[in-house]
Image (tube, rainbow, N blue to C red; front, top):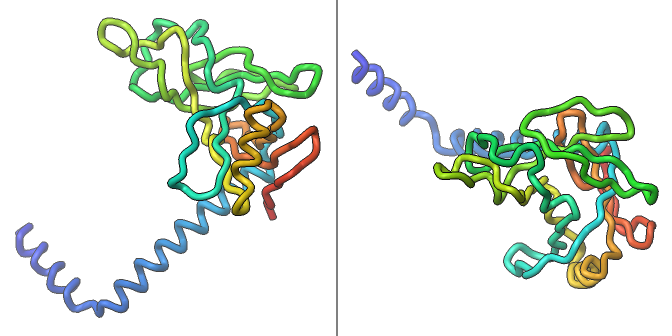
Length: 204
């Protein structure tokens, strides 16, 4: 019975013209790309702005085009109360509570395995553990120190601009303003040099 159904479906599939299949595949790709763009626009439009201090990163990846590789003061953090707690997986999601300092730059307060309430001006940003969730005898506990990725680690710039911005980043002169939704999802909104925008993402 199942074999017959599969054979019938295969026969119907073979009758569909190839140009129709190619058209459907192209439409699906366009729809996926459009969904990604709309999703990013929502983060940029509705997210709370946080300002993050960049830090030197080495080496530079030459294979992905002209872009700035970004690391942050919130990239490497102590696990705090998460240390020696079950991580559940090798690269789990975590939530970092941020609060602005007197200069308006957001600094980490604590790291959590699940979303926690925050009160303004605090913000909760979501990241994924790159290193630090595989300690203990069974390699399933949070380590003492965590390396966290926030999907904010690269920013494409016009050709020829990447190296200049990376030099400024290495001098701690580059700030990133990110938009963060209540869910913790974040996207880069603009780059700041000496407090002035040098690149800004359109969201409309």
